[in-house]
Image (cartoon, rainbow, N blue to C red; front, side, top):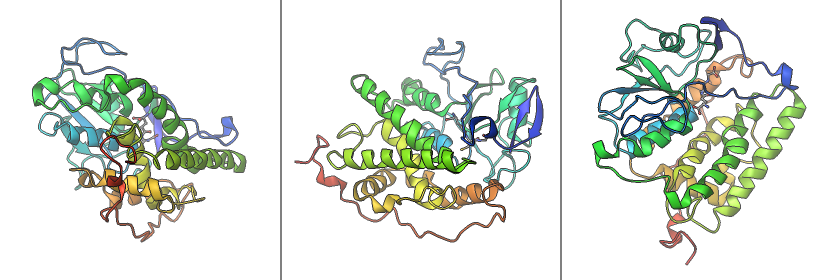
Length: 331
Ligand SMILES: N[C@@H](CCC(=O)N[C@@H](CS)C(=O)NCC(=O)O)C(=O)O
């Protein structure tokens, strides 16, 4: 793993030393928005109109951030409109790699590594090379590499083209969704990374404590309602889902987030299965790639690269979340 510095690739692990062993995530740098009419979105510049076949998504099936975008591509029926390239699950010295069996190389000719795609957009780019990436085939540049924004674009920008008007960020719930997202991001989505990538005991202890306090809060919240915002699935649920579905498979073992498993939480585990069993979702979850990526790509954490056989998980088994009435609350 590494990063680009003035357009040159450097094989380098995260620098946690300057933060007392704590992992601090860098902000994504490409922040333009695809919009229905091509006008600028909340950040960046305009000129990215929603059009069939124009945009291409690069993901890793292992990555929880990329997984969100894959879910929204499916939920919003964008598969025929937005192309997809899946990078190899193993991230080595050159970072994410394209073009072996599991992945086609995508619309950009002559590149083998994802960092080369970043360089096509910005030849002297400095920063991390992350998935997901939303690429514009027309202007041959990166539109956006921040998953929370890509899912918002997918949620509504293409509605006139697909006719799918399902809304996972409804106006009347936005404030509450944003508030839940903020806590879930800091303590759970990014929290597991703060636990797993900590390089000092203190940073690990603090992150671990915060993570499980947040999971206890979520367990409590989900004891009284079916989904995070009540009776209807929103963006907040999908953002939490991609972390939960990886939790017992990799975060408990590889990241040492092991005070409790999701299976030990009656409400969270039922909720996880409920979401997993929504139409089309199970097909977006690839446990082989998830386990391969984490266990084989972080030599500082798992030097042998051995990928464990377990745990045995069955998210297709029944859940009891239908006990909540239509309103989402217990009847
Ligand atoms: N804020 C970004 C984070 C994306 C991210 O960190 N992706 C990870 C994979 S799970 C990655 O590509 N890491 C490579 C690196 O940091 O060098 C988003 O939500 O899209």
